[in-house]
Length: 103
Image 1 (cartoon, helix red, strand yellow):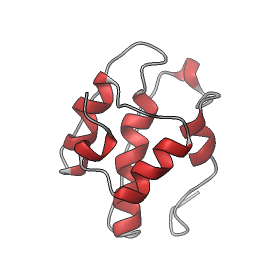
Image 2 (spheres, rainbow, N blue to C red; image 1 turned 90 degrees about the horizontal axis):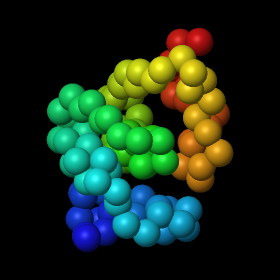
Image 3 (cartoon, rainbow, N blue to C red; image 1 turned 135 degrees about the horizontal axis):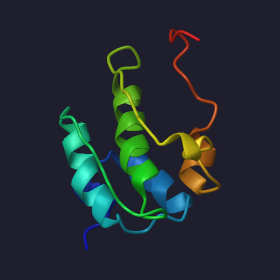
């Protein structure tokens, strides 16, 4: 299985994945990350713990680093998943929002 760099993620983001303990992309990440980086709409369905959050957060972070004013996204989750969970990526991304975003 190819690493996160093969998905098109920037080297700095691949390094962050390694520091968070993410070694190899999961199937949902392999499917979603390249599509999102290309600017395509993406819907990922996979079991709990399969890496869905990272599949969406990683390309969003990369696009934000390239142009903090040029991206927007809509992430829909079931209401029972109000908390992003205890994993390393949600914890690292929690509380970060664009300064110009409403709310």
